[in-house]
Length: 437
Image (tube, rainbow, N blue to C red; front, side, top):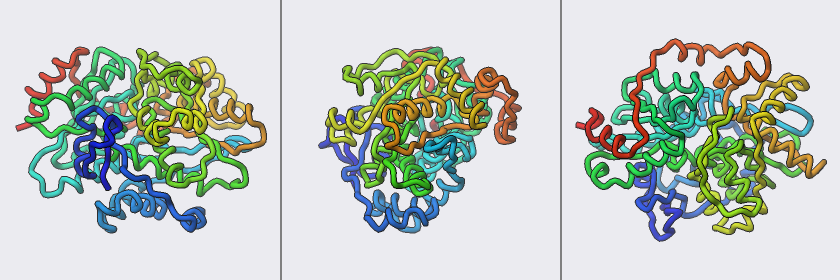
């Protein structure tokens, strides 16, 4: 299958070029030329299928023309090596827990898929890949751990100074080896902007092979659709319509859910749940889409004022703004509302949500209150609450016990360089560092 740029549908490239480039030359995001529709029999069998069996079918539908059956099985087995349980929180509302992977965040799925696929596509090549990543938190840890010590790959992570949690920061800054971390004097959008500028810099790209492992890369983005199929397969109530609430920042996760729906998964409506970085909810309510400076919140991984994947959402709906507004509802919530939801759910149901999952829960509750009795709902719990221990402890008045996997990161030593908020400084770092021969 070929992949086209969201900025120019006439620009089409192979799977390898789309994955290795990451971003199209015109700064568009790559999209599959065709979105396959899965068979009726697949959906009939879905409740009896394992996570891996679901993965084989979905990835085969998308990549069978580019990868062998054995490659697809190897890729899926590597990606889906941990569970994503569906947990009942209250009557009619379930949490899809996506934090059971190596770094306890949903991005482990995409990072493992991306690193494995890149190594498959580059097998036999002598060139070394430089993966550039901007992170507001979990992307950095997932990508760093997914690519750690992968031969032929160097990873450069840019993150905003003082705007990620200590645990998130320690998960990617303590590794060393082929993982290089730059602490930027700015916000996430500044980091993302510099990464995009690097991809457009002709001299940089003539000297080194640059790619991305943010959700702008299809190899990071597409595999996230798998857990939507799995969630539906585990849903005990299938008679009611399904509403899926996705806590959203850069909007790759929501886009992956829409991809699953476009492939035939019966999700009736999506809820784009955000913190005060609300450009997409405002668009869905009728305002023009307009990037804004990001606002810092307790759900920091969603502090994105210019979400890259917005244009993927439009593309998935044929650039029909009316259709996207029909299928996607948008709500936003402030820190006080987020904290109150965390307290309420802990008090009434004994379930501890992280701040991002709490935003997803709030969006789902608001939608279901507006449509009583019609829907069963799932919200995404995108990270273990321990990754935001200081916030969770303060809000809930507890001393949350950390999983051992998180504890071991805290004892590591940060290996970082401070970078001024300037592309020329980043460019100079890439040209003059020891990342290339």
